[in-house]
Length: 159
Image (tube, rainbow, N blue to C red):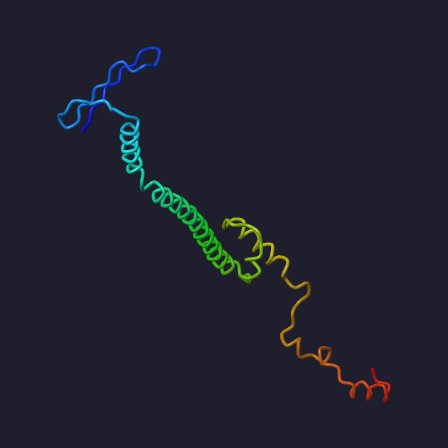
């Protein structure tokens, strides 16, 4: 491991520099080429420390992207769960109040109280306005029109 002590004067000139490297005393570089070589080695050592920076950066970006996807998936799961919970609640309230679940599902409200109030409104509005006679659908008034029958009625003036 190397220790370095730099002391500089106010004017920025180098006054004293001492380096202890593997038990040897510091030797000042004799030429600009030697100084450039020393500086280049130091730069390479520093760059080697951060050689995996791009890899780490891409992994961090990928992790951030995956966190975003996970958050989106959590929201979707919560949405599905809330939709299923509402569907179950609608079925329960519809069964309790004798209302069609599909009609009640189209109504507003997410709480049991809201859906019960909507179900009661549906029951009130869906009550028949007149009395229902069993077999009324089979009465002569509800018979399908037949052109031959109409001609015969007109022929004999029977209405």
